[in-house]
Image (tube, rainbow, N blue to C red):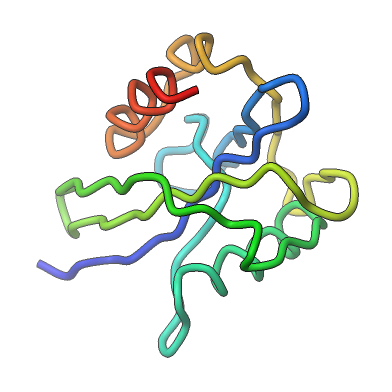
Length: 132
């Protein structure tokens, strides 16, 4: 079973809300909400993947110095094992604009559990709630 490395980000705005994005139709787990991010490409480090994905998906610029490693998810799906580091970020340049047709929403940390999320993301919710 292959291991897939995906980098994710918890963008936290000045009001303490976290940005989540809804997986668009046509993708696996369509309709579920998740932390923005994406697959780490060959030869890429997780921080570089997030910087690239945030620009491509959200039209914002992030520097590696603003990414704080927070936790990681390790979850076995039917066809692969997902390893997903989650970074926290409170500073970026630009306004969040969904660039790939996905819905985005700023949500209070305690309300994250009200949004259906992929199984790998669920353990991260309690960690975020307890830390922030």
